[in-house]
Length: 139
Length: 119
Image 1 (cartoon, rainbow over the protein chains, first blue to last red):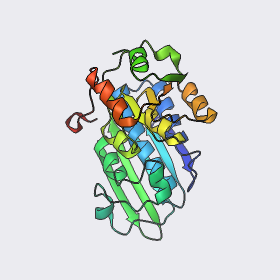
Image 2 (image 1 turned 90 degrees about the horizontal axis):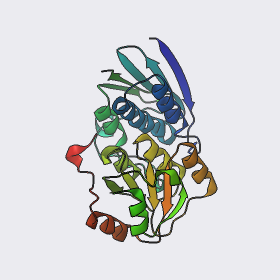
Image 3 (image 1 turned 45 degrees about the horizontal axis):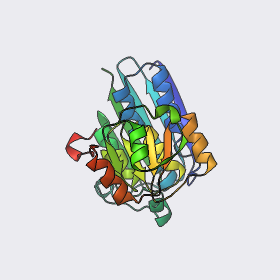
Image 4 (image 1 turned 90 degrees about the vertical axis):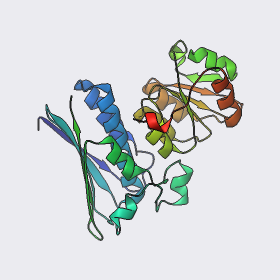
């Protein structure tokens, strides 16, 4: 990898949520990545960042850039997802009313991340945490 | 349609981003559910919403939507206006309700975001 940077995301911090994704978008623009790919990464990254703020006990987003692809890793320190198949189902969400009032929690985040990425893999263990790895091919 | 025509049709007030009023726009998305915007909205379209919080600005930014119209007389605070200004986004507010705003724009030629054309 030619470039690597990570961003911490805190639980329930909806004032700062979105800042990491904005920095990622800005970085990719500066690196000359095409707009369509940036949009896919920005949307998937932002969905992941909101998920960290909404559902996790805190975590981080790691951006890795090479000449062939861009990797985005979203990992947290818990609480983990008990049923991954259910979590990946469009429309299923455990988000609070407060989160829904902000316009989120529709059960679209994880499926939308998968749709935007060229490669998507999620692992989760209750009590340990969740790790999502996404790749985006550069044209 | 140019954004200044959108402004006239909805009698909207510009809060920031006046430099974009000459920009052309072809689609719009009327939505209070940001998850749907991230899933279905087209880039460069207008977002019409009655929801006012920082994540609305962030959602539009990530989806490459450069203009937001707050309907039903909703008006964001200065912090949100400053954020929109920083990322060069056009923000307007109109007293026209959501259904009526969308109807006026659709009747004048703006199209919606069909799911089959997503991403």
